[in-house]
Length: 287
Image (cartoon, rainbow, N blue to C red; front, side, top):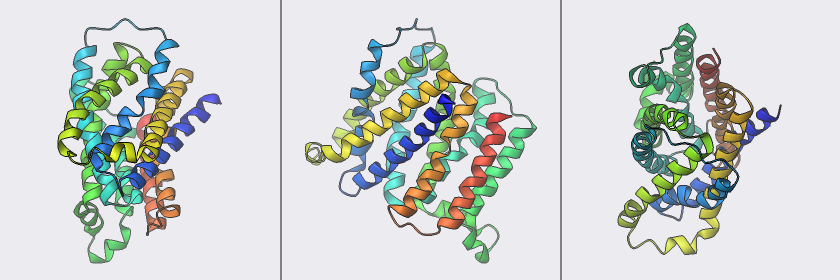
């Protein structure tokens, strides 16, 4: 039962991180927020090194760290750009498409192939994404998909979901060549170091926003680190697929937060759409 609590807390903290990120993006440059997400998580993650056994590093660890970390630099930036320009309730659900892309990338990278339940899951995820803009159906049967892709936020998050389907495989390689918590700390350090020169260049002239907005940036790192810690704790208590299935409910929480905090419109169809997408994920992950 404890694993369920930690898995749900993972989902809650991820959604809370998104809320603070979107609030911060109103006054702070997106490159600074993207860097802060990783940097301000480190003070909460690094102390864990004193409580874990330092693992033996496998031969593929550094390759996984370089490729996975480099790609996550891109996704972190695109993620912040996406939630800055569009509603949380229509942007965050795009992340649930990652398992769909995994059915394509996993066979190519690590040789894992889907079964019939994976195919059913794909159909449900596509149906759910259609429901996100079902009101557009009056303009044509493909109008909901078209409207989704015409908006910048969901379009950017779709790219994030696809790249995450690649990095997830390198995460697995990194975990197998170290340990879960050590890998999380290592890749966060790598991403932070890589993002600093990018942030410094793209946000030159805006660096003063960091000390002035520490009150807004610190919670982003805090809730990001809490989500990672809870996720690794849950994984240590049960099967990974169970944890990921519960963790994906963060999409529903984000839709609700979008409605309650940011007064976003279309809550009914977006909530229905993301729920169908999550059922699709259950078919892919649990079966």
